[in-house]
Length: 140
Image 1 (tube, one colour):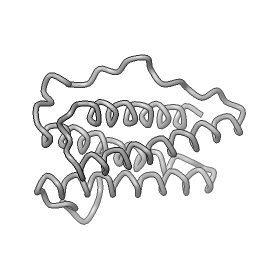
Image 2 (tube, rainbow, N blue to C red):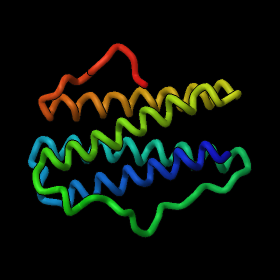
Image 3 (spheres, rainbow, N blue to C red):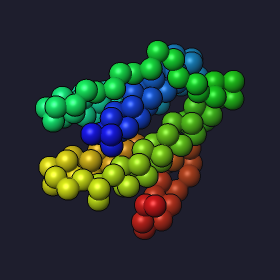
């Protein structure tokens, strides 16, 4: 349950981070639309995680009232995108670590599916930043 709640907490953080980016005024269309779409994905992840925790008899964590983001360093669209990319990379690593821990194959499959989505977000953000979208053959 702790792993699922940790993942849920990270999803809430991602939702809040994309909200900061969207409201910053720094993201221009069509990048803003992509960021809002990614935020929607994180909302879906959070919903599934919350439902799963409840179904398993646990109590889902709640989103924090306030998150501490490096907003003073977000001065350009690229700054926001780099920040989002760093969060997505962290999510990929977290889910990569969680998948083998789940003894329940359905939980492992769900985590792997979310991992794939996070990896795509990271790749898209890297591409928009002009970086190699997939920097290596393996994610670590």
